[in-house]
Image 1: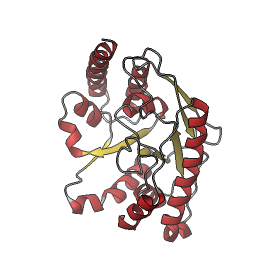
Image 2 (image 1 turned 90 degrees about the vertical axis):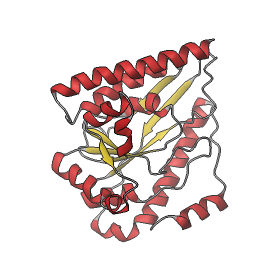
Image 3 (image 1 turned 135 degrees about the vertical axis):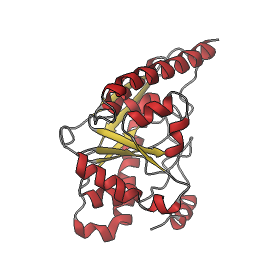
Length: 257
């Protein structure tokens, strides 16, 4: 019964927040802080899940200016949990098709997020250039999930290099964001689902010489994030499943370098 009530409340909350955000964005469409303000309210839905979310931001990251944030992408709850960590002047990159989802899609578009056409290979190839240009021209930060998909309990998946190439192109640092495990830790029939921690790591600066070492930097950053996520899981008491090395290696070989 509790699960049913929670699903209804989450759905209503998402619709109401989306509608309010749409109305707000009609006054100032595509404003640089629209995503931040909307994310704050989406993040409050975590309480309906019975989850406490703590966000830790080191001084080295506060007021840093335009950056590329990279975060681990776990499941559909991310919209209500990781949203708590979205900073002012930040937008995300999503599929163009999201725009047609009732209420949420229109909110996602009007808040100023970057929409790309993944089915069109030519346009997809230009995504890095387009995103980098928006970072430079509008002084925006961009939030990306370098795994490219939700992990759904498979651990921290191998990273694609797009986020790092975007940062190098825009000449801005990477800020790794580590979220503790929520896979199979949220039981909708349980009143208290414990705690989740989202912690920002120090900036990763990319120089022009690093453009030839993107894959190496990508792998190192992933390893650093994995260490921190493991520490956060120990603190919250939620173990993170690990991807087997063989699968991880095969995945990396298949990626475009």
